[in-house]
Length: 101
Image (tube, rainbow, N blue to C red; front, side, top):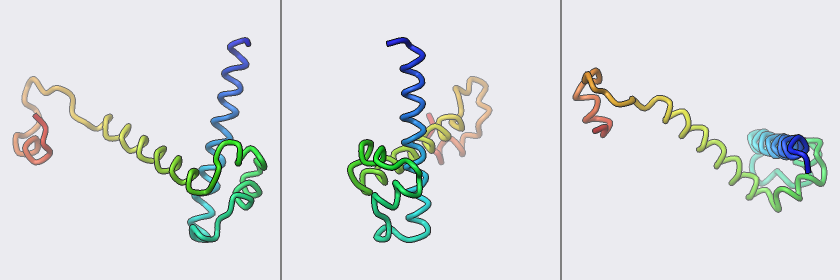
């Protein structure tokens, strides 16, 4: 299979996944967890049966959403983490408070 097709398929799968995750989060915020069903997610996202092929239930969608959120937070923290500090720019008290060696 040509590489272009792999990239296109992966992009499509990523777009479907993102749409399902965002729609589910929106519906839960509006209706609460108990008010959200797989058919409602499929209807709202406009994806239909692809929702069920990617996720078996609402709980698995929420797990994937949380994993994505946590990964994003960890990426942000990694960007904020001070790099090596050879000139001792960061105050000692800040390093002690935040457990940085």
